Length: 384
Figure 1 (cartoon, rainbow, N blue to C red):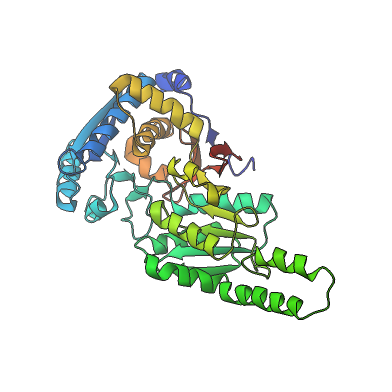
Figure 2 (spheres, rainbow, N blue to C red):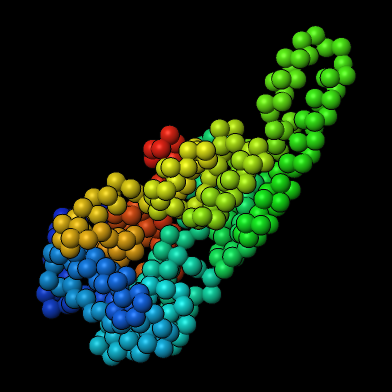
């Protein structure tokens, strides 16, 4: 473990000041920022700009210069703005925000982009995904399953645009899968699919057969046994111990509802899902609790929300927190090399602790070491 994380650096904004003397007084740390400043997503862009300014203020080093440019959430505009940043001598850029904006950035070969997307498939070689990707999430789920000696886990993956990102994360994490199922999210078809996965009709028939058998038997107290059986929905053991549902929002709730309908209960089987960003609506879904998921460090996020609100009188998004941390990451890496060679540092193994948690950097990839949470009895609890 010491060898693996020998470059681990614990980020403290105060500590940054101790290193500032190593940077030449004339050497500016120029960071480009590609965000939507116009169009339908301009509010997201403004929140990121505010978070980045907050990070610069907290680092408190006048060597850092931020240069925002508009993407308008369009690939052509993104490329144009990236070219303008290149002409200014900038080598590293935070952004773009959206995967669709990455299309032409491989033309900017001298630039390194730290995109806020969590997608990792088919990225240009000079783009590094800094979002909370599926590999990071499955690494955390894997840790939980191993801690609890869970042997048989089934994985339910929706047939959506991010389906292959999910499968890539499962593969890269080397998580142990018992069975994998893809499902159609259409509510009119979903329950039938869950019935087939959980062998609901067989278990329901088992119950009916058992009631019939008891009625026709000479068993003592058979009336009591029958009454007890009639309170049940099925008979028969499920051949799994945990279910991982790679879904979100109402679609996630549809899956958990279908599981309940087929007599799969969270008190008997682990219900696990992906990062829900502390969705408060899950606290109200008491029927599907406990339910577990990986996410960023909530205490740090709550502290950041207070800091951000005090500065701007509005609530931040999780993308704001991520962009705040990326300023710190670039600042930290600038002490290991000048920004002209920053792309090489992303190929080496580095670790960095920000507000979100620990960033693990290697082979032009960023993974996050996440926390793991449980929602139960309308409360959120950190497991690790």
